[in-house]
Amino acid sequence: MQRPRWAAASTAVWATLAVAPWTWFLVRRWTPILDLVAIGLPLLAFGLIVVWTALVFRRRSTLSVIGLASVTVWGYVAIVGPWTPRSSPAPTSEIDVVSFNTGFRGGAADTLLALDPDVLVVQELPPAQHQRLAAAYPHDEVTAGVLARAAADHPKVGAYSRWDLTVLDAPPDFPGLRLRVDHPEHPFILYALHIAKPALFPQSYATSFGHHQDIVELVRDLGRAEILPLVVAGDLNAPDRAADYALLDHDLRDVVRTNWAAPTSRKRVPGWRLLLLRIDHIFVSEDWCGARGGRVEIGRADHLAVRATVGPCPD
Image (cartoon, rainbow, N blue to C red):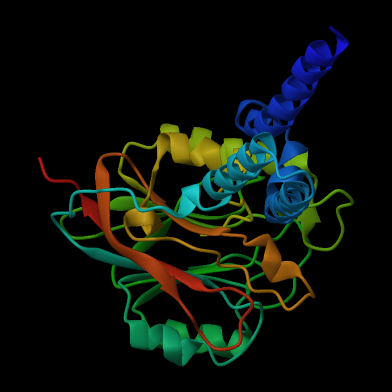
């Protein structure tokens, strides 16, 4: 009599352990600090897969195999799911947008100019590179700290355009430039952004997880009030599996995902690339569409550039 009860309890424990990772999708937006878990999710998923694989070889039971399959599928959905392509009608008027964080490394301007985008958003741009881009584009705007390593409250962002740019008012915490782009047929609003990275112990160019979410909510709420179509481009330091990304993705269209997306952060800190962080984004209003989204490798920078063709959706 005792053995069946023990077996039932054991089965329940195994089933609970197999299903437990899936609760991530229920709790991930409860508090900003869970974005820290989102950042480390690839390492957590790999660790769980290793543990379950060891259990399969040790116990050789059906339940352990089911648990391994469950954790593997969960890891794929949680990490690779935000990279999968989303269908979008081709825009009726094509505006090529590129966003790139140079990491203050030189040599990027020539490569960026070779891409020949209509609108270019650049973060952490060395002075000489800014001068090179400004000479090539008829219109450009920069934030106060774009030409030097500035304090944390001065984002470093430059925007370059074929069409006239008008700087618009923005709240004090706005992390970049709010611009009107006077396209001759389809004027639009451009948010050229560089949001401080979230950290447990903010220092240098970093902020708390709670403040990072406050900034993303500010961008979202400001975007909701825009009359013209909106394009949001930049290094948002919001991994695509985090709640902060979901705040924007709920209201806007992630046009980089018109093709397969993938990590954009390539810092040379040991083990950093294992985090598989896609933190550079281009979003547009729901009434605009995108095509040819993707990443571009530029020099030895610690980010990949992102690009997409955007414009009004077909009627």
